[in-house]
Image (cartoon, rainbow, N blue to C red):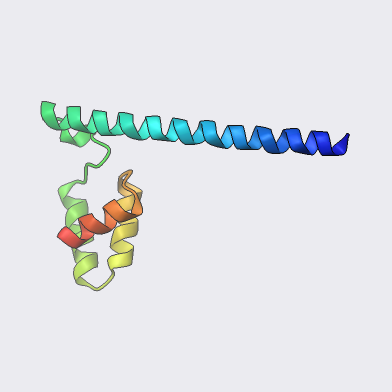
Length: 93
């Protein structure tokens, strides 16, 4: 009896994990579409990757001060970029 309940819980957890993963992929795809629309319509400030000029200056200052890790963290706080995207953004500054 206990093994049956534990098995059901494990299977339920796996199914839940799979569904959450699918939803995360859908949200990411929708963010990409929204960002593309924002860029095409001239509303960059509405995009999920928008960084104001003040924030860019601060991030550039962090990078130039040798604090690249903090700069990447700040980018990730401001935007929805993942770690690799944020690192690439800081490297291009």
